[in-house]
Amino acid sequence: MRTLLETEFPSRQPVIIADATVAAALPSPLPDAVQLTFRGGEGSKTRDEWLRLTDALLERSFDRNTIIIAFGGGVTTDLAGFVAATYLRGVPWIAVPTTTLAMIDASVGGKTGVNTPAGKNLVGAFHPPAAVCCDPMLLRTLPDRAYREGLAEAVKHGLILDAEYGRWIASHRDAVARRDPATLTTLIERSVGIKADVVEQDEREGGRRAILNAGHTIAHALEQVSGYTLPHGEAVAIGLVLETRLGEAMGVTAPGTSNRAAEWLRAVGLPVAPPANVRAEPILLAMHADKKNRGGEIHAALIAEPGVPARDGEGWTHPIDLSLLATLLR
Image 1 (tube, one colour):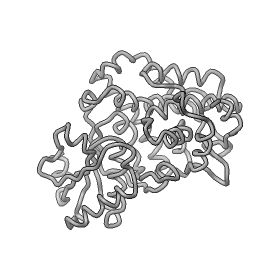
Image 2: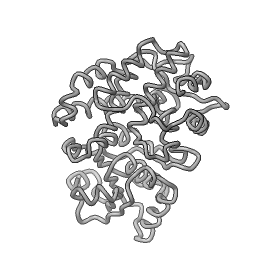
Image 3: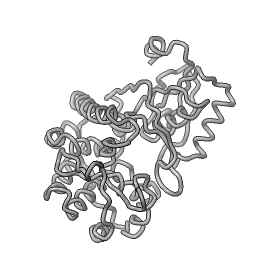
Image 4: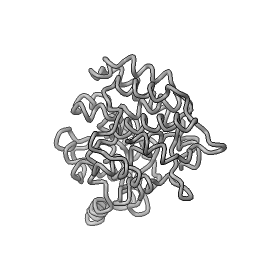
């Protein structure tokens, strides 16, 4: 990290924003830098926490030569990235992701933001990191559930654009489960490559980038109704299965796609159905706040078949039939 800063950002003063749990468990990427921490978890991704961290930077008189180092998982990259996007109208930041989810998804693409009572990620900005530093060995320090949840995004990448990659993930389930370094390196490289290619073509989600939201329309609603106790990756896994089933019922998705999605997700130990205590009505209500909605219609990024996103004319999302979804959820 120090070499990177000295080489690429020699005039920048670093400040670390870290998940407190990560900061306590792992060595700091810059031991002599100022470090601000926040309580880990999706519940901390709020405007109040953004305000507290921003005020802490102002109180310490950090100027426009600041560079923020986001040290932690997906919540950290979203929150610290949003602080960087808005502090003094924008300063650069570097992602040092420590979770599977952050390495293969959250740290790539420049989406930053916070949640509100109305829904997830409704306040934010596009502000790509100046660099992303991934160390696959950090994934060996994670609890099993935290490690596995991020794999949902890798499966999603296979489902939307690269069926061969999805099959590779399922066929390497044992190596993935034991966190084999070479396998993890390949998985990170392939997922980052897929996402980066999509983002490069559509940085601000004006078109094709919407395919990266596959599974997320239902996932965000599941997270909200669970009070964010359901981890994001598990919600995405469930969302992928439900949205492919919905697509099949709507005649948009090829029959058998949802079974393939469930097969790949089960291979890496992820859930494929909502928790038993989750009811349909709160999920449907929460979906009305999704930022992908347009003209009063709820939209989702559907899949035509494994490896192929579904088009709706010139668009990349489909208005979904809530009556069909209600039937699937019951």
